[in-house]
Each structure stands twice: as structure tokens, then as C-alpha cells.
Length: 312
Ligand code: CUA
Image (cartoon, rainbow, N blue to C red; front, side, top):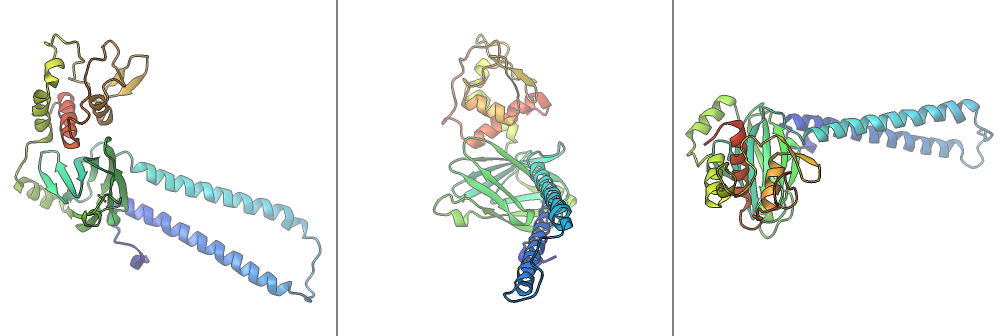
């Protein structure tokens, strides 16, 4: 449908977005045509000197017609809002069984890393018909992960981890752009997403040289940065035990509770004095400026592995 206007639609989100877009386009065109036809029709009918009746409108037009037209428009607008909003909100939360990919943006390249440690530069290979969850961080300035064929665009912001997900529906190669001006080579910060059949992807993945798995790198940083000095049960320093913490509800000083997800773990490493866990003293130093985003990703992956059991 009108495909010359749009890049190829290669994800489930793309089909949805296009439907909404074309419906809005069609509705706007219909309203414009209606108003235009009335303007032209009335200016001819009621031109100066014409004998058309100019008295009061019949009661039917001034009441029923008005009420009907107004409520129809309101219902239509609410429906559009509901449809567009639910479609947009659904890209914020990935399905539970999604494949996780870590994306690090920096001037001027995209680094992607699969769960088993295989990493790529300016490329991302994914299997078809599989939800892919992207956990994204920037090492310097704001970038934006933009794949037109997936109708997917999400800012990648330094100092926080942003998420999005997609489900590719066509085998092929698709452009990846940076859509946020990020310096001299912004326009060359390009990449490609390679969507493969599940069998091909399996073969591709097992043929890649394997870096340290993310959690394994995290375990090394955990020891090297001295985290292990306090966060073990045998330590003389009173610090929370991190085993089993991931995904749990944590009680904070002051009665608030938070869920220990990636964002919370990350914030606790960078701003340890913000959310103090009930029963502990604010003694942990901040690692702001000491750990870069890739290292923070590895660390949170390691802390998560302490709960999920796939330990290095
Ligand atoms: Cu990165 Cu523009």
C-alpha cells in the first residue's frame, strides 16, 4: 500500500504504525475534501443575488445534526488516541522471552553485544520472528537508534539505560541510522541490521569468535573495582548481599520500595546515596566517572546472573 512513500515494513511494529499513519492520512483527506466541497458548494449556492433561502435552519440541523457530528468526532478521536497510544506504549516493555542485546553508542559507532558475549560493530544480526530486547547506553552524548524499516527510533542517553524492542518479520538487511545530531561524524554513524532465519542465525552465532560473556566481564570488574570487598557475606563491612536481589522488591530507608531492575542497579552504582536500602548505612562511594557504560552493563549483567543462576 503506497509503498513508494515508505521504507519497507519489516517488523510487527512497522505494520501497526503504517496502519495508524494511513488511517490518519485517509481521515484528514476525507475531512479536507468535505470542508472544501461545502465551502465551494455554499459559495456558489449563496452567491450574491441568488434566490437560495436564507432564513433560520430547520431544527433538525441545529440540534440532532450538531450533537451527532460532535459525538462522532469525539469517539473517533478517542479511538485514534487509544490505538496510537497502546501501540506506542507496547514498544516500551519487551515480552519476557525476548532475546537480549546490549547496545552501546559512542562517537561515532554502534557496538552491539549478544548475551553470550559475541559483539559486533555497526552491525546487529538477529533471528526472524523473535522479540529482540535492546538495552541501550551511550558513552558520551545523546544518540538515537533509528531503523526506518522497523519504524523504530529510541534515544540513547548517557547516564541512563534506555530500552526498546522489535520483532523482525522479513529476512534481509536494514539500515540503522543515528537520528540525533551527535558531532562531526553523526551522518556517518551508520550500521545495518541483518535479519536471518532462525537456523542461519544459530549457525552464524556459533561461528563467531566469542568475547567474554557479559556476566563474566562483570565478575572481573566486580573483583577489580573492590565491590567484592563489601558485598559478600563474610565481609566485615555491612553491605547488602547481592545474591537473589535482581527483580526483587527492595525496602528503602524512609519506607519507599523499589524493584531491583537494571535501571535501579545502575543508579545504585552511580548514585549510591540516593536510594539507601533499609537497615544499611550510606557508606558506598559513587562510581560515576570510574565505570563507563559498557562496564556498567557488564556489572549489572553479573549481578543479575547472581539471581538467575546462569553464573559465569
Ligand atoms: Cu550518534 Cu548522531
